[in-house]
Amino acid sequence: MYNMKVAVYGQTYQDNAIEYLIELLDELQTVSAEVHIEKDFYELYQSKGNSQAFPVFTMEEGLNASFDMFVSFGGDGTILRATTFVRDLGIPIVGVNTGRLGFLSTFKKEDVRKVVQEFKQGAYTVVERSLVQLNTEKLNAEFGDLNFALNEITVSRKETTSMITVETYLNNEYLTSYWADGLIISTPTGSTGYSLSCGGPVIVPTAKSLVLTPIAPHNLNARPLVISDDTVIRLRVSGREDNHLVSLDSRIASLENGEEITISKAPYTIKMIEYTSESFLKTLRNKLLWGEDRRN
Image (cartoon, rainbow, N blue to C red; front, side, top):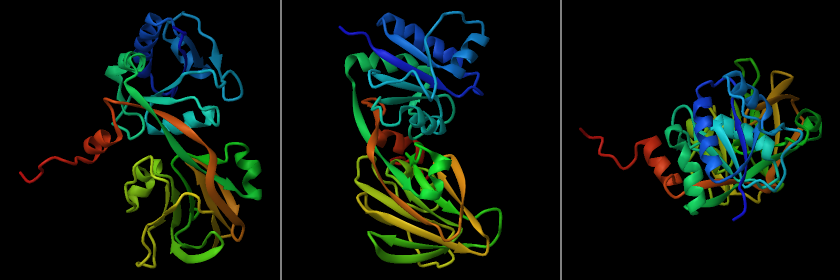
């Protein structure tokens, strides 16, 4: 039996994660796993009086494709940040939720030991989540090799009340110009995030689709549009301001109006571990209160 190799990451402002981290480390010890902890998270662990030594990793070094699992402590936002560590290494990610129920971090913190136990039993599948990437010369320096998003790429207006016009082309054919606060280009994973809040549809993670969801459109006939994920999307923004915002999940930059933005599916995926006990449909039912009789 080979030894599991596990990377562990968490938000350093969430002190409550450490007691569950200790539980996870204890469980990983029972299977003689090799554990590496993200540098800042490890320092938080040490600051709580824990002296056990572990190798550390950072965004720049310490991770490679030999890891079996990347455990993320936090919420869905933490998993979005975890993808910036994993990138194209293909390490499967699992989220342990230390806050409210998430769509990505589905494991309750109280069940943290099951992350190891059920993995050992093989009671999981690895689901590949597609990413969207940005190809825009003026933003390459801003985002560097983190030019991808697991949830969505969004163009939106800056600190102003005036709307923007988002001229949109699909595979070089003109679609429409959205007159709105912005436009979200969402993956199936991101369909339960910002896009859903703006009236977009829920899409199962394995669907080969992207969604264009306008944010507060002034042309009221503008509706969310589901397209094939091999579509190349080109956008050009105009408006009263000189600049607009472009965000990749939680990373944000400013771009001059009139610059062309090209968005397409990334050439690699993020692998998520989906445990048999914590399926996407189960999460959907719990989070959206589906399947319950709410008439009383």
